[in-house]
Image 1 (cartoon, rainbow, N blue to C red):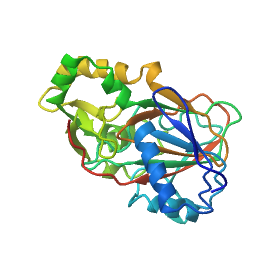
Image 2: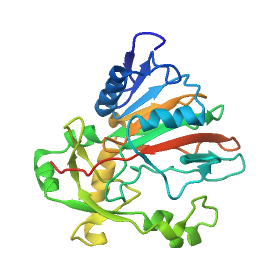
Image 3: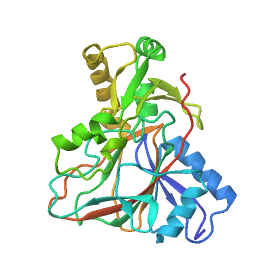
Image 4: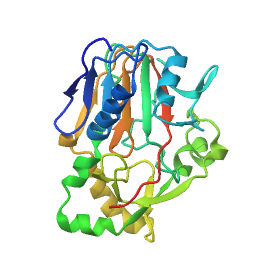
Length: 280
């Protein structure tokens, strides 16, 4: 460590910046435990000035647990466990512009991701996060009781599958034939580490409530999406080169606004395997 670890919240209900950590130096088990605790508490943690090779990035991720090799993103050459999230200056669209939770379409959803900034725009290109703890806490008691009994269907097909690729020729996603995932999860989950209740639906991958039609589900899902995206639930991560953000998919949504036309943005992402999600 360069100095004593210090935690600075990014917003009232989501996110924290962690000072005093040098991943390329020494991260002992005590420090690793404190980082895990901070992630479970704040949903996303940000560490600046992390000058890491791909090998160091991967070695740090593997100390948190098994790595999930993404099926649909381009991979960093020579490092198949690291996905590359790239937008070139002449690309009109970016990846992740809508609120979502990664891998909710998997039977065992990913814990979260470690995103390392390699090249960032001189303006724009931030990532927004929203706390699903806060979204759940702010539900009425009556609605919370109703949602406890519901499960929701999540799918990868309409985002990464062959039909999506035909509809959007500019897509950069790979292996559309592998987009066959459908999963059913509780709408309200008990976070495996913090023990807190969290809302677990998202606008990109959730398609309906289990046992309900898409049409029947739409009104309530839209209400929950508006609840999740409330400004007071959010924080903003402003990227600098060598910034590492770690987020927890069980506790947050995120989105990357497409607000940096004509500029390049290159990020390296490692995704961590998770565990099955219990309801509350």
